[in-house]
Image (tube, rainbow, N blue to C red; front, top):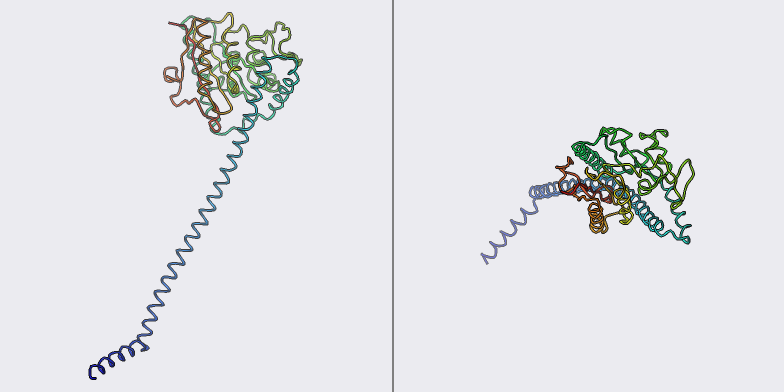
Length: 359
C-alpha cells in the first residue's frame, strides 16, 4: 500500500508540472519558435525555388523562341536550296536529252529558275555560311597566286586569268579584287541569270568589265562562241552559234571556282570537261580547280570520288596529274583550318584540287 501511494504521488507531481502555466508557456514558446522558424525557412525556400524556377523558365523560353526562329529560317533556306538543286538536276538531264516532248518542261523550269534569282538575298546568309564562303574565297585567291608563281617560273608573258561563278553581290569578284589584289580584267564570270549579269558588270554598277561577264552556264561560256543571250535576244541551246567577243572558249585560265553548282555529278563533270578539255590551253603550268556541291551531304563521299576519278582521267588526257589540295593546305598557302563541309546546317561541300604536269 505504501509503495502504491508513493508511485501515485510521483505521477501527480508530474501531472502538475506538465499543466503548470510556466511550463506550458515555455513549451508553447518553444513550439511556436520552431514552427515559425521552420515555416519561414520553408516559405523562403519555396519562394526562392519558385522564383528561380520562373526565372529559369522565362530565360529558357526566350532562348527556345530564338532557337525556334533560327531553326525555322534555316529549315526554309534548306528547303529552298533542295528545291533549287532538284530543279538544276532536272534541267541538266533535260538539256542532255533534248527531246521535243520535254522542251516545254525545260522551258518552264528555266523560267522558274530565273524567277528564283529574285529571291537571292546574300544579307540573309547565316554567319556559318558567310564564314565558310570567305574561307574558300581565300583558298581561291591563294591557289590562283600559287599557280601564277609557278607559271612565272615557266616564263609566262602575261598575268593569269581566273574563271568562276558569282552571284549578284559580286562576293567572289570583290574578294579577288579587294583582298587578293587581282585586276578586274583578270576575272571572268558566267551566270545563268540575266539580272545577275547586269549587276556584275560595270555598266550596271558592278566590278567587272562588261565583256568579262557572260549570260550563260559555265559549260556554255567555255565551249560556245557566244553566250546564251546577246543584245537581249535569248537563244535556245543547240542553235547555230556565231562568233562573239564575249565567249571564253579560247581563253586560258589558271584557276577555276565552280561554286553553287547543285549536287548533280554529271552536270559538274560536264563543266569540268568543258573547262579543262579545250584547245590552246597551257599544259605546262598548274591549274587550280575548286567546286561546291549543295543540297546536303547525302552520298557526298561517293560524289567526290566520282568527280575525282573524272578529273584524274582529264588530267591523264592532258599529260598531267591531280593533287588533292586539302591533304596539305599549308604547302599551298591555305589556312590549316579550312574544311570541306560547312555553311548553313553543314549543307555545303567544297574542295580544291590541282592539275600539274606529270613528273
